[in-house]
Image 1: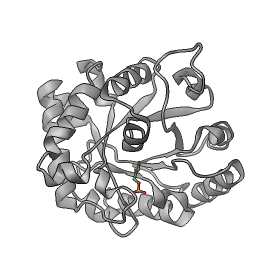
Image 2: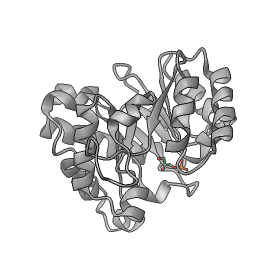
Image 3: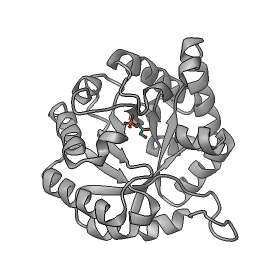
Image 4: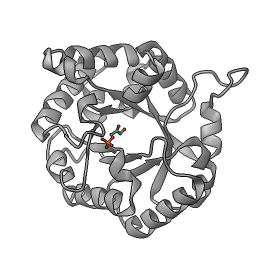
Length: 258
Ligand code: 13P
């Protein structure tokens, strides 16, 4: 781990937690994590719980993020939510281009690029997801796919902005399968991502970018992953849905910070 980059652990709740459940989970996390410092803690609940949790997280060390946004600022876009609406309820982060959106909802790199642009314009920090499917890894196309996601998904980002973007490397075969990438496999791709960002944007700025690993992160594997130089945090799905799971992940990631 590199201490220049403040580690960031994000919980992606996906399509889970009604408001009452969300409040219970957040109350537990606030209780368990109130004294955690040196690590950024973010939760991304579903849209319906954002407003309530935005209030509950005021003055806490846990920050709020959304799981998506729309690239236009307002207007006739049924079902969509704008960046300014997210800020209005207290969001500071937004996940963009998650593989579930790419695969179930046809989200393209071009859509990702426009969403990233809007997030930056509105001073939301985008967490941009990239990663290969199992068949792509088996065909030796991992780097090609990650490069395509990055080069095209970040095509509207300016050189002076890249250090603000968080990248999440999430190999699709590791998501929700219980089969995480090894620390070595994660580091290999994270190092590739950092080099690519350096080549496309700027080396100094790329050195500041935080790259999260996502895919079956659990309390049992977080410490090993965080030992890697270019693993600067995690994007956690299933294990972020329990107080014990998420708080243990933050604490064990944190142990490696000190
Ligand atoms: P799991 O942690 O459930 O594998 O999900 C990872 C993920 O998709 C986070 O965005």
